[in-house]
Image (cartoon, rainbow, N blue to C red):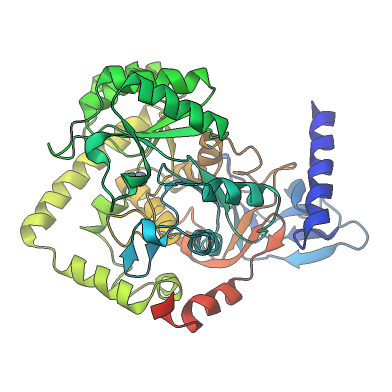
Length: 456
Ligand SMILES: [Zn+2]
């Protein structure tokens, strides 16, 4: 097995090396950082790790690992290193400054979002069912061929499967297959399978009575058909009764936190240990807690236009006491449910719903607020870091990401402070490395702040 892995690593390094600047036969030894490897173990103080081409090849303590002849040495004394983050639920290509919708879904805008993720230390993001046309598959192939070495990996679930009432021309479900029958389901899933999609997205939500949601027999058919093709199903569902039905039907991924968690739901999760949940807490949380918008956090100022910042700030400032009180109650319910699921050992990953159309869920930034929100709900910073790295990578089937470990892709973030002390230290980004190469964050920042926001 080890020998096979080594062969795979060598051949992929050679392939990537032939294609561009991601690799140039470079070897670097990074020394002195506190290293959080991503599996929840205690950090390695005064660490050393070797990056050869685009992979970690050795990880240990400073002094244990010698630099090979010709290797560059990078002194990270005083810094903390974490694996690059993974956002398992986003909507890529829709948001563009003050507008959001399918009209913005272009190659240029999708790539801009993938550079934003990279800027924030996110190595991969999964678009959850809002993609359409050939473009996402073309881009996926280009990413796999190594065409964008300093952008986050773009993962697509293709078009989602939605009941008729969900689909409107101006929302993200406009791209979905309209599902009226089991025939529609088979056809849609087979098309996605032919596109080599790994995760199928669906929605089970009556939207406060506005939508006739998929029945249990219909979502059961989606799950069965997907499993037949070796695909997994991610669902937007927040109602506990729906969640129970979905667990019984074999759902793989919940893309949102469930609004109420009782003992029966916890038991069902325990009976389905491979089922994962992503929480997407940004919307409910920011109504009651968003100190980063006023004044805007430097990372927000560097990546979001002044008018978009102002719009969100005004919106949040206009929250009425009534809405605030309801928001607090609903947050408390969510947090209590998260604590129960976490205590029961449920597999929790990080998915932000970034770029979604609820408005101003800033791409990349939401990863850092989401981690803060998860800690606010009662998870420890160490648990949240594992969720955001190893667990999210595993949920997406990204074997090469999620840890700083020999054989993994050298994707990591260098921080000026320790996120185990305070999870918001994840925002104190000194540098980001993707596939062994440092992301030129200054160049990206100049593109966003220097190019005229109105055009962006
Ligand atoms: Zn979503």
